[in-house]
Image (cartoon, rainbow, N blue to C red; front, side, top):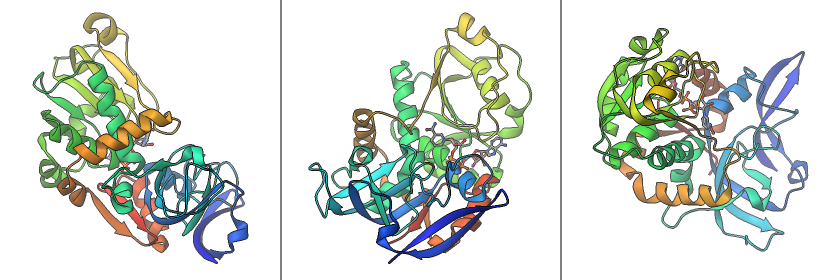
Length: 326
Ligand code: NDP
């Protein structure tokens, strides 16, 4: 028997309960993993509260992230005892996910834990941190370099935002952080943000072009804030867009693109190819300071997930939430 958070639906409403399941209940994939930690992302919040159409069938074990050790493997790439991390691929949405003491998974979805990284650290990073690293790589590929001017991070006190601030600061960028929570100032400055920008000041409908402020930006919120970021991006700058915490619209014009040569680069972590994932995880192991992670992450028990799911969808969670299954 093992413990799992199970989502079910009755009369169109999603319910979440911790249950004891038998190993035989697990789906028939090729690698059995003892999950040590999972984490709570915005998408998990939507799934657990039933706010978004994330889960495609019930019953479902949520958790788009997990890290742990292989117990059994029918795939020659993995053997019992191997430390692995998984993010994305529809796990926790279409396939049973990480919020359980055990999971059966496809070997293709797994990444060996980078040398020197433990499973707790991997989940402090999780999908949010992987996405932050992919956004940083997108800025670099767009030619954004430290010393060119401020780089903006929106939704800065959230999971993707917090890791983005810490990573960019560690790489030598001057980071400016948009937040709707002024009380997070000490936290964001502790992660390396030089200045805070109020969410309010970015929230109105922007003009097609505004004063040039940002050499680059990582946007986790979308909608008018992303439109404003594009209007304020300097000539030749790159904006990496990965999120929709404010909404999925993008009420912009072509002006930043055709007059300022601005690049808008979409970033997806879910279907990101394995080679790029491994590159991102290796870089996270080397470049994300442990001290920042200590500030960003805190642990909860599986039983606390439903409560924290409500909090994350209403924008009240700071940093990263790790689910302890060890
Ligand atoms: P969090 O909830 O941890 O962070 C989101 C942050 O956005 C909040 O902390 C808040 O930051 C800000 N925010 C919330 N509501 C609003 C609003 N109405 N208007 C403006 N800002 C708001 O979520 P995650 O960091 O886990 O995810 C962030 C986004 O990125 C989500 O939309 C998620 O779906 C997406 N995502 C996409 C991935 C991909 O592969 N493309 C992978 C991971 C996440 P503050 O309080 O500082 O203002």
